[in-house]
Amino acid sequence: MIVRISGEGQYRLSDDVRERVNQLEAAVIASSEAGAEAAFLSGLSEMLAMVRSAGVVLAADELVGSDVILPPADTTFEESRSAFTGEGLIPD
Image (cartoon, rainbow, N blue to C red; front, side, top):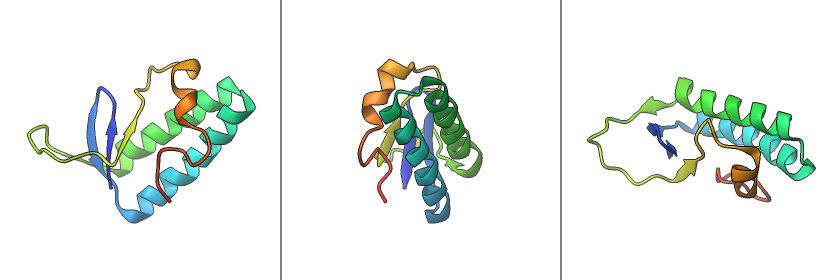
């Protein structure tokens, strides 16, 4: 799976990393739906950190379509919470 963090770049995630990111996203969705801003932002930060640390960075000149585009780290709760509802962004 190819994941883009908006404003940063693309990462290739293995299936096991995708599953871990999906689990983190479930917590982000729960926080979003509960209106828990601090937990949402913390969970989003953890999810982005997982993508950065466990994903393989794609070269800037490698043109690959993204399966998922995640919001940037500096996004606000109001800006990004609408993306994290129901099924979320990361496919199961």
